[in-house]
Amino acid sequence: MDTPLELLQQRLDYRFRDPALLQRALTHRSFGSGHNERLEFLGDAVLNLTVSHLLFERFGESAEGDLTRVRAHLVREDSLHRAALQLGLPQVLRLSEGEARGGGAQRPSILADAAEAVIGAVYLDGGFDAARALVAALFGELILGTSVDAWRKDAKTELQEWLQARRHPVPEYHITATRGQAHAQIFEVECRVPALGRHAVGEGRSRRAAEQEAARQMLELLLAQG
Amino acid sequence: MDTPLELLQQRLDYRFRDPALLQRALTHRSFGSGHNERLEFLGDAVLNLTVSHLLFERFGESAEGDLTRVRAHLVREDSLHRAALQLGLPQVLRLSEGEARGGGAQRPSILADAAEAVIGAVYLDGGFDAARALVAALFGELILGTSVDAWRKDAKTELQEWLQARRHPVPEYHITATRGQAHAQIFEVECRVPALGRHAVGEGRSRRAAEQEAARQMLELLLAQG
Image (cartoon, rainbow over all chains, first blue to last red):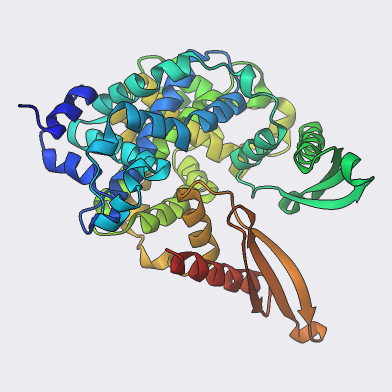
């Protein structure tokens, strides 16, 4: 008879030399010591590199900024949550009784963290290539289905990535004014990058739209200065 | 006679199968096409994983939050800049004439990026283990010399890492008041985490000190709520 951990290893297409590592990857902090947070730390970095490499290969001509943006969109809680469901992690998670009663085994953040921890455990147990194969199996389809252009329009993300690539702090957004009646309000938002002494202003029919416009203006400023 | 690229490969303790990859890693965007930005994207992720693994091994008992914080302090422009100098990258960088005349080959950000690109090139050419060996050689001493406690007091960093680990946006800081005469001013700073609907206030004799205090208050708020 297949135990739950046997089944999971079949789904992972990987057999652990040290099954205790897999057990640890499935143990939430609430369960007690021997939990998965350190494995999650490692798994997050493994995932980041393997997805980066897959994107590097898939988008052979794309600029670094585009790759960074697509990666940020792929390596997120919702895709990790989906991977966790695909692996059947809710059935094998170890949680405290209280956390389990509260529906913890279905919580996207707990499942996403456990998925990262499992990736970290495979990396420790079987090395980088084993972990890379697992990530390719879990994320390959998502990567094949994505396009660089799909993410090109989000100016706030683009600005943040641009600043991070240059090791600057993130920008700040503030509403500086609103005009018009309640049903036709115009928002004015200022985007500031204090570290560079720059600010730009955008307007829009929502706070969100005004922020995007302010970010777009800021990007133009920064790109123009070279 | 040893060419500059020969010498660099000796310093890297790695010989490229495809020397064009190394050449590309040393080519700044200003030089034209075939520049190093995509390799830098990959190298950044390689560095992140290899340093994470080295820290995971070195600090066998430390919590994930401590590892994340130490990693953020190690993988920064100044340590990459130092690595670039150690490898002699200023002598082999390829820049536009204008950029070279402006001292580009000495600019920390350009050198740090090139160091990441070289790590990415070794990864592509020789695989993960070759890149891991290089990072261990470049950063091993730094990692051995560091301690988890050394970084424990920076509340702003701790708060940011805590939020990022839970996939929340970074906090915002604003001066809300200043009191006292110029030589003995007290700053009051508010720290806001809009996504969680929380704010906290700190005071201090400098903006920086007030921000740290506000971050500390916010951390206590968030940790208390579990």
